[in-house]
Image (cartoon, rainbow, N blue to C red; front, top):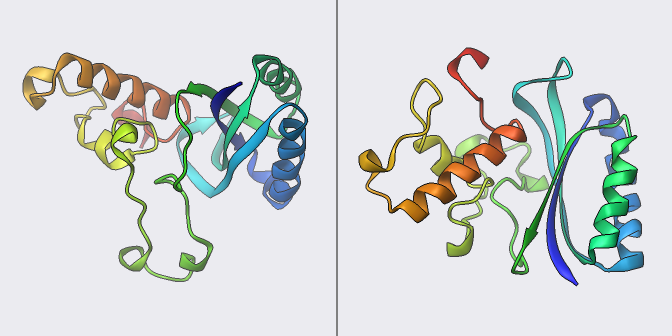
Length: 180
């Protein structure tokens, strides 16, 4: 059994069916493993359009299952028109805390400065969910700042570059400055 992070981008017209989608995916994974975390990150403006849509609803899962369950998940998602994009990553650890992109339901009416914040752990420092760090690692044009400028080691720079590429795939960060 392996641990996997799964992020789903749901079509904005299907935002009212989010609970059904979460429960359906939980039941699919509970047959072959366990779901440690299922988070609804909310409906968010995309950094660039995907299939002519500018908003999407993000859902995050952390599951423990075998490779066959992930294969079945990918096959089932492939033909689902409600899913704009998905991302699956194998991890070596269990995620115990909420992710930095999680929105607390009780914070919806509060202004941005009064909302609760989630601080990532050390092993999640260079992660696609840590958008504050990733935005600081980009130039105004969207290029990644080189290691000679930031003073990072080569290993840290590779982790940051990979995290930025994943965040761009999930439309959390733009590819270039023309996406604004």
